[in-house]
Amino acid sequence: MVADISAAPRAAEPDPEPAAEGRPRRGPAAWVAMYHSVSDCRDDPYNVTVTPARLDRHLAWLAARGLRGVSVRELLAARARGTERGLVGLTFDDGYTDFVTTAVPVLHRWGFSATVFVLPGRLGGENSWEPTGPRKPLFDVADIRRAAAAGMEVASHGLTHVDLTRATDEVLHTEVNESRHRLAALTGGDVEGFCYPYGYLDERAVTAVRRAGYAYACSIGPGPAGSGDFALPRIHLGKADGSLRLELKRRLARYYGRALEAV
Image 1 (cartoon, helix red, strand yellow):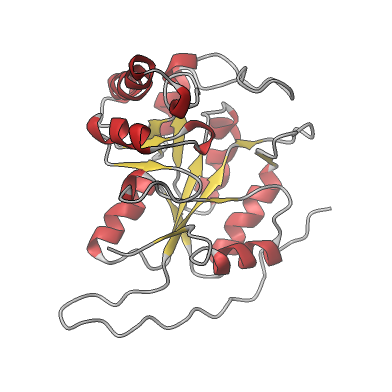
Image 2 (cartoon, rainbow, N blue to C red; image 1 turned 90 degrees about the horizontal axis):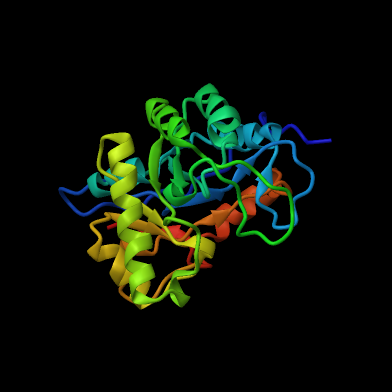
């Protein structure tokens, strides 16, 4: 049974520090949540699946605290203006078909948006990079366009979900550059975001992503020194995260280097 946290009491937000004259007041550091698949599948050896009901309760928890889930693109634009207070980045890795069929309706119910990281080299395929566990269908061309039309940010997860830290220079260049070009052709717009498969990155991968023209890249933990927006940390949210765990993860985000600091 999933506990109902939609009516959870509002957590006290620390008051922002006084702003320097002429600059907006800053609140607590923003953070970015990381999801993958949204379905009722119980076979989940990698802890990458949340049920639609659990996602709905997570979003209710955010809304009850005056927080709104947005794409990373929107979050960074707000941060540049100094208006990121009250926003939380929502990301969905791998481009599972259930993002458009299941997650998007839940996001719309709360008036939220998100970023979905897609693998254009596996369109219409499945998650075959996982050696065990259920096979799940991935985005096809129509799903990419449906996600974009629904107001979601479509960004790159590379071409085929390979560990970029072990890739040859040629493969690294292709995974990073070709994926961006293919997605741009399908969406008809610029592709600003990248997400490192498995969360693995090093200075060489960061440099390749930056040179490919992306505006930012998501990791899991902090990246190499000087990575900046090309190694944005995220907080994994899973099926076991109820209200108490969510509050703990939010409060410890900065301590563990998982917060998106102001600029």
